[in-house]
Amino acid sequence: MFKFEEICELIQLVGSSGVASVEVDHAGSRVRIEGRSGVVSAPAAAPTVVVSDTRSVSRVNDADMPSAPAADDEEDLHVISSPIVGTFYRAPNPDADPYAKVGDYVEKGQTLCIVEAMKLMNEIECDVRGTIVKVVPENAQAVEYGEQLFVIRAS
Image (cartoon, rainbow, N blue to C red):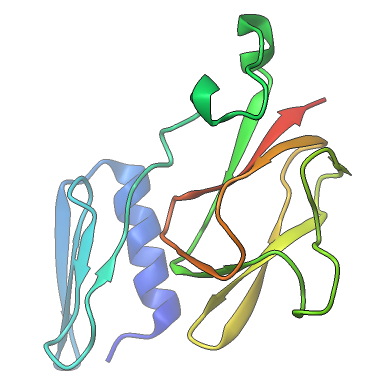
């Protein structure tokens, strides 16, 4: 049986390599990952995991922005995407304040949210300094691999 980490690694390799698909048999389990169609299938007993490869999206539609940025400002936008399939949480627990919200200035390495996958809480850190322009998913919403989580105006 495949470990979750192994499947995530395969997804990342297929997504970054441009390979159309890969199928791996291991210890009686079979996983097929298709790069462009975005479907990962596992043995019949396991659920199918759907993964969208949207990492190539580097710009945000003006209609999605609270206030449309000028054309020059659009170059400074940076998207933080989900590295895994899971459930998006804005805070460490339901009673806590969100890690980050629109208008907050964030530093590189600062925790922005949690994506829960298979009962593991994965902290997602910022990889640039800047101001949060948009939080894309709603709290407790399911997110897919490569799905946009935050839009940040880098500074």
